[in-house]
Image 1 (spheres, rainbow, N blue to C red):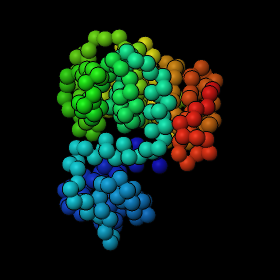
Image 2 (image 1 turned 90 degrees about the vertical axis):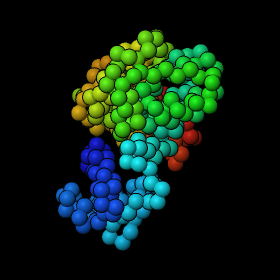
Image 3 (image 1 turned 60 degrees about the horizontal axis):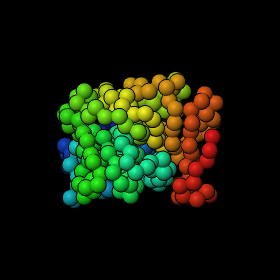
Length: 271
């Protein structure tokens, strides 16, 4: 089942939970036209992400639950976490003191935040409120943001890409909902897409940071066409055949190992 549908289904479960206070496996199975086994897997994954508490035959909100506006980003942040941390480590190795860089509102870009604190005199341009807030205790890191409206799913500012600071950026790191040979790098939301494309236009070098689950997936809008992709950093669970075809087309693809693989954490395989 495509990751995009899976994510939408789980968000719908959380929305139903907010409305009713509890959900039942049987009711969700009928509403979403999937098996009870699939719904139980969804509830188990959401419980592991700290978003609900399973009960007999269903689930309830966990006490002290985050508000729904934060759930989508926080759920994504907890998914494929070892892969994202390894990708972030490899991405940070490409930075130098004094760099200006772009970070989009993806959870993988957010994983770079702790690695950036060791650099001096860097400028971060981002539309992510979560990333910007993370640097409140880092006076040596200058953060620039656009104006716009709040997009709740990603906790980001969208809708006014023209307001992005007019600065030249050494490098940018971008997530994607899918990486595909035909659709390229794709995104789910048109307003988020517009801000990302504006950020990419300001970068001398744009690098996509995506875990292995995003390969072969296609979201609604193409962010960057396949022939315009130049550099991808991904995790070792990416499909080798698809990675190989991207490399053959001239795209640099760095594959990093993560905890649980035989290679050391953070190790990188060259094209």
